[in-house]
Each structure stands twice: as structure tokens, then as C-alpha cells.
Image (cartoon, rainbow, N blue to C red; front, side, top):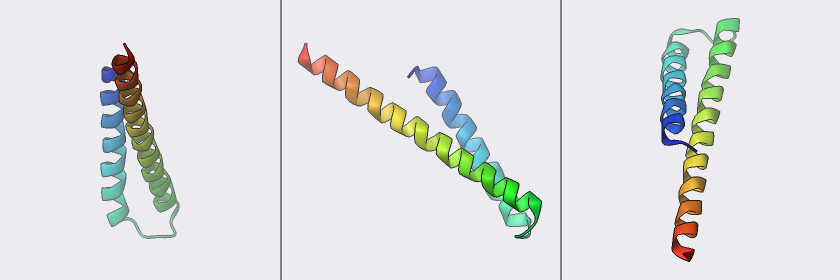
Length: 69
């Protein structure tokens, strides 16, 4: 994973998490806006998890390939 792509994706994930988290504090549960915002929060968390897993996987692979040479 390119470092620039990882930073960009992590920035978007942080934006989605912070924005939807702040909105969830102001919305009342049970409304359609609340459900969409909760879905957006879940997507942000999923994107962040994918980025973190990708970075860890890439670093382990680089460490393994660098150590075997």
C-alpha cells in the first residue's frame, strides 16, 4: 500500500468518524437521519480498520522480505 493512499484513506476515515460521531450526538434515535449517520460511522470505522490492517500487513511483509536477504 502506498503511503500516500494510506494517509488519504485514514484521513477520510477520521473525517467520517468524527463528523458522524458529532452528528449522532445531536440526532434523535429512530429517525432516518440517525440511521444514515450510524451507517456512515460504521463505514468510517470499517475503512479505518482496513487501512490499519493493510499497513500492518505491508510492514510485516517488508520486514520478512528484508530479513531474508
